[in-house]
Image (cartoon, rainbow, N blue to C red; front, side, top):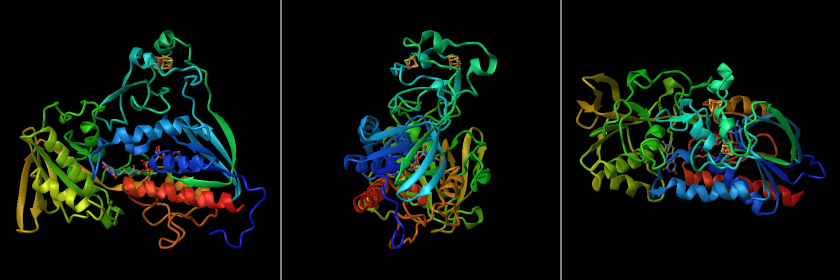
Length: 448
Ligand SMILES: Cc1cc2nc3c(=O)[nH]c(=O)nc-3n(C[C@H](O)[C@H](O)[C@H](O)COP(=O)(O)OP(=O)(O)OC[C@H]3O[C@@H](n4cnc5c(N)ncnc54)[C@H](O)[C@@H]3O)c2cc1C
Ligand code: SF4
Ligand code: SF4
């Protein structure tokens, strides 16, 4: 998409990648391994994106951490990758071949050059806070890393919850840090980078989002989401299944810690609903719901898993067979129907729906309900898109220059897309897009 354009010389053969999930990391490694410099920016303190929150992955049931960690470590140590976490792009000027980018670095209040990642600060910190990474299922300290496998393994202080910043006393982290790395005076600062091409790999959120976006709010109220503690979303269930999660991989319901004996999984919670502004299929939920029901049965042998579905979309290699395995080997009960209401009664969560095959109403009294909520664009995607001069589709995902022949290009020459920021995708497709976007950038570097 650069035909007819005047390309500046010299072309700056460095790339900026925004977002260090699996898409951004794959693109960064492909470019860096070809001998070019990459600046990789993520707004979170550590890299890995959503995949870092997953337990096992469909359709192979690989341990997500085991396949992700070698990548995060390689990215963290690569001599051609400048990793800027806890950072956000503030402004972008210039054009293909010579973009000038200002990147805001948020204060961690920890000098990462001194910090050894020993974790003593978090151990001694008295302030516990609900953990976003654990999707509300667990707690973290006011000084924290996202997970034990975090790359970089350096903590940040959450200023809003730190006793010292709020009440002017404490400083336990400073007292116990053996290398004097705590720095309460640290300030936000800006770094400037020059790059020739940009890959946007900012991923997705789940509906409803917390922040101000097209998809914020509480429109899943009829499912009790946000109101009934034992109605959770898929990422929260991933954390319950994770060995490194808040329950060390045991499935326990949030309200009282009991092992749930009947679990209802609800597919298409928000997806394929034009009234909610999400007419599209979220693509990964049929598969991760089968995975969830299967993994639940592997942990709770005498438990019963029910899946409410509209239809099953398992169009990937080995995917149909995976869903069949859930039904036939793990005896997950699939009920074809839409759930109309979920409410609490006598300590249980009652799910009302209709079996559209028999036409009869259904009621299941469950201990836990897991909603496969819709995949939506990341909070802040619209603003970033405007800054980059790229377009969004009617649902807020970044728009490809041409969905058929240019699925990785945007309307802005030199700016490419990879992963779930242009629409819902699974990990294999995301990785392929990361490599594809990297190849686009490398072909520019080879040409100019
Ligand atoms: C419950 C659940 C289970 C799943 N299970 C599976 C599975 O078993 N197998 C499978 O194949 N797929 C699974 N998926 C899908 C999988 O999560 C995605 O395919 C994958 O995470 C997409 O990667 P990504 O890099 O595009 O986005 P993300 O993982 O969302 O990463 C995006 C990164 O960009 C960063 N970012 C965002 N905005 C900015 C910004 N403005 N500036 C800087 N950084 C920014 C974020 O902090 C994040 O690190 C599952 C999804 C869900 C919801
Ligand atoms: S000063 Fe803040 S971060 Fe440090 S130990 Fe106290 S509460 Fe925790
Ligand atoms: S105690 Fe100091 S060195 Fe250890 S993780 Fe905390 S800040 Fe880093």
